[in-house]
Amino acid sequence: MLLPSYRKFWTRSGFIVTVCALTACTAGYPETPPLPALAKPAPFTPADSAFLQKLNEANMTLLALANSAKTNAGRSDIALLGTTMAKDITDTQAQLTKLATAHALTLTDKPDAKSHAFISKTQRLHGTAFDKAYTRAVIRTHTLIQPILSTEIITSQNTDVVKLAKDTQTKLADYKTHLQ
Image (cartoon, rainbow, N blue to C red):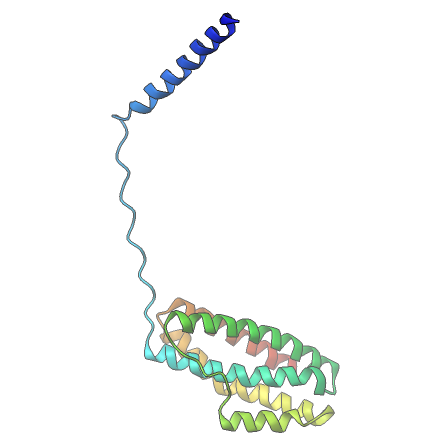
């Protein structure tokens, strides 16, 4: 019985001594370089803040209309577009909210009185009348917000805001193309 224990002892102790000896030899290794400085966050200007507020307002209006299009549209392609728009705008709103929260910006949660009146009026329509009003509203919103998006893409230093503006610009152009 002593023989296997004796062998195990010397086998294991030799391994342990070797590992300990190797870990103690660190004289030739260079010191690790310091970590690079953290990148500073992109600047967030009052213009960026105003842009986020305008985009939030447009999104709330389009989201309400898109949700109405699911049930009130006379054409099936408009109802399908409403479903797609509702999903896209909800995703955009999540990004918008995250960006606003990161910069301590409070977004409104209800459309202004003029937009609310328009939404209420449009939601009462059905069929062809709804389709016409919905098409005009999406095209009008695209026309109104397009210069704001373009300006923000050119002037903003904040990459997150620019990305949001480009994504929104692309989606609105797709919606407008589909409706024309």
